[in-house]
Image (cartoon, rainbow, N blue to C red; front, side, top):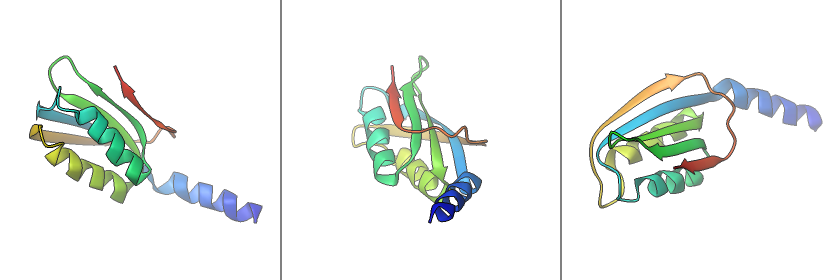
Length: 104
């Protein structure tokens, strides 16, 4: 049984992906960070999200590629008050993040 746990962890490391996401538009002051945090929780992703001084929102998400793609699709829409103009995604090597934080 222990071997299955190790094998499962190994497979998770192999298929784990990391996306660095930048969202521009009217995305600050509209609960975008909380929106990303809620969506990532329902998807089981790790990472962080923060506002940038230039008005964009920056997020990093790690986990299964399909779930990250779902988060990116949600970012293209955002919460009701947001007006998303663009979403840029860069795929990177995962760092093995655990948990998720809203950075200030």
